[in-house]
Image (tube, rainbow, N blue to C red; front, side, top):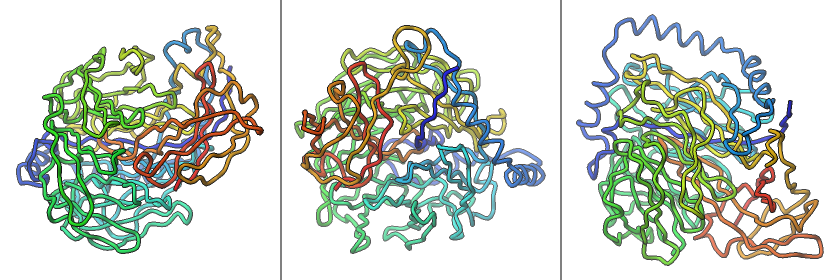
Length: 541
């Protein structure tokens, strides 16, 4: 047996009904709500079942869950692990990990909703089930939201100080947007209600961390974007009103603006200065990729894959030169919808989960279990090992600080309930780069970060002490994940310039905040065999 004893962190993605991403219309229209109601209402015995499920939640054996997790560290040697990777056993949790955020403490904040059943069936939305999960021990601790509100269907990303910033949520059984901003302080383990937003309630909004430390709030109902500033509070971008899909895809771009690139077919830049303005750059690839996924795998380069009717089509959006350029990438081996893309420290991208037949929420006969890995050097996708559970509606995947990937969740909807789809659990994937290439199934020797600064500034050169510096070929920063609905609001990978120094290795921080918004990052070393170190949390900016 090979024992892995490494601390790591996570974040997750959550997927709504297919109607939720219809192109270019207001997010909380009656059509959206009616579609959810038709899917989620309509079974007898709600009260009895709800009482049973709530009792199971309260009686969850946290010690047993932790023991299952620690057993997951034990991997039986497999001869082909260096080619296809390896999955852990299934590890139970007390909630469905729909919303997830990797915290600067190395722990993971997870939350779902009021209970296991569709949110439309609960008349009172005055709490949110939440846990903090410790990847060092597998112990889950309850930290239910205590502000009297439900942040299910919110958008979220990290403030520069490490607090999780949460916009909107679910107000009531009519699926109206919640007009509220919350934060979670990872150092005090406390929830805080900051007050209402300026444009009203939002349901399925996106939150985007900007280069100047501000937070951009878009969609979810109101067409007018908003900016949150730690010192001055909220301001509305009244001259940048635009009807976008729910959970729109936006990222801070190297040119200092914010790129809007999906899931519909538009390519535009948003200037968030003053009251805001848009600059349109036409269409992207002719595809509305609702319930597809994306990952910024290199500075200014974003991979898009799948979506729509579980298509195989993938593309790269390149914004390194300012004007967006779109090119084809190699097709997935299996078309996917409601899957997740996760960029790894070496720049490859992992695709996990989803369904292959375009099902709007879940089809247990069409789940995609085999993982795939995309190589940016060749554009090709390689099939990897298969997970045990189907991961479709309300599932998630994210990079852990030890270089593995956590995949979990699924369920909490009417269609899910009707087919028995409720996955209050996770599985952990060890990619091929963690194993020796000799076929023994043993784990590879990893580079180590002996010491490095806890805080770095833009353009700063800094020393990293490692055991064999000449073997280190890359140093990268990875933004910790903040994921829901197949959208990681934070996911980006930034390679650093490196050189030799008297202390062994010297790296240079990114040139500016447009490349890497201020906040916490995981720093990885990658050796000449492509093996990553365990990530170290550093604060940038």
